[in-house]
Image 1: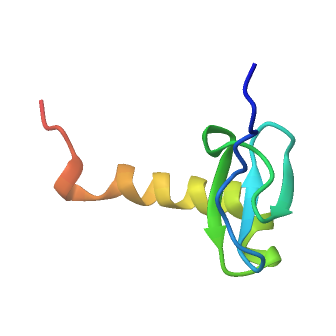
Image 2: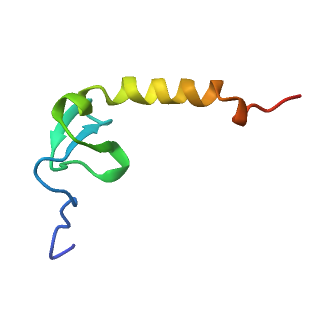
Length: 69
């Protein structure tokens, strides 16, 4: 059993989107593997999944990354 509990690194004013809970958190609260961020605002963090989808689509459409035949 650990004597000291490691806290997640982060600062107030940094916002994260928790993939495990589907919520926005300040701080962070959940472990790094379960979150996206940091974001500059609560609003940005609340759109994390939409932003990720858009970036993924842009990457898929980028001709520099297309595998031809």
